[in-house]
Amino acid sequence: MKKPAVAALPELHLPNLMSFEVVARHLNFARAAEELEVTPTAMSKTIKQLEAQLGVRLFNRTTRSVALTESGAQLLASLAPALAQIRNSVEHASVSSNRPSGRLRINTSYVAHAALIQPNLKAFQDRYPEITLDIHIDNELVDIVGGGFDAGIRLGNALQRDMIALPMGPVQQLVVVGSPDYLAKHGSPKTPKDLLGHECIRQLMGTRGRTLDWDFVVASRTVTIDVRGRLLFNEMRSTMAAAREGCGLAYVFRHFAAADIREEKLVLLLERYCPPDDMFHLYYPGRAQMPGKLRAFIDFIRAANWEEPR
Image 1 (cartoon, rainbow, N blue to C red):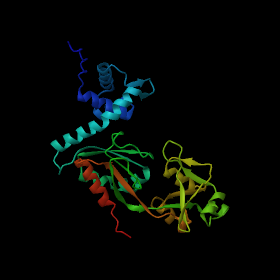
Image 2 (image 1 turned 120 degrees about the horizontal axis):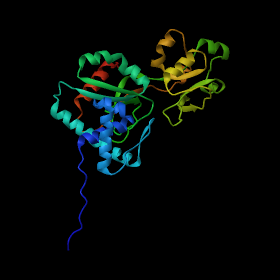
Image 3 (image 1 turned 90 degrees about the horizontal axis):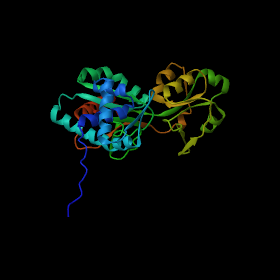
Image 4 (image 1 turned 180 degrees about the horizontal axis):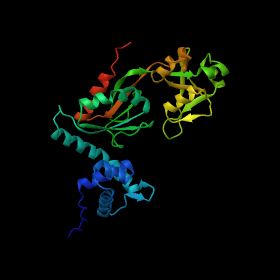
């Protein structure tokens, strides 16, 4: 009995799949073309060719936006980790460990960037001229592998699956601050519960509407105060700026607000109730071989931010 014919799989080329991953990451053909150093027209032609080979539409495109289709999202979920492994393998085969090079993609919050990375950028560039730092700043705890990042930096050490976390100094502590003008008009809170009678500037955590918890230690217990206020920001720079203008009290990192506190633009409040210190952590996928560019970045940034234990 003759076996039924099996449909041949389409012949796919790795550069086409890599182009798809870059477009899916940016959701923008022009930015993807810039990363791969090709023209937007060539990028669009490559994606159309891949869609024709697969027999499915991977992106919904309009003149204003690009979005993954369901088929495109499924392909990206399985393809991104595989491409990351291929890139790492090629790097280990072709680049000597004492000359790390290539594009290093880091996802971080602004505060972590300001505290750990920004003061050391020039020194890092001088030390590693062949590494290109691609830094994305947001407040989301993103999927590092799915987003095409080499590493991410966030406060705390809550691990995603198959991730490694390394502490990055200095230690951070969330504190309440207010401007002298605000306190002169409204008084200073004496206990965390007093915050319920104050205008509090809240900070959104990511895009899902969750706000930063105002946590305090009262009688050896952690207490969260459900503060109220008419201002919400999605990052700490704007939160602190509004506090300086007397718009309300803010809950910010002490290290981040140190200059304003020292210059008496902001007053430190409820210090005895502030929660224990925490540290930023750098997250990266656990794998047998770490890319040389990532090892160079980790070693350099940790050394630059080292502080003696208190």
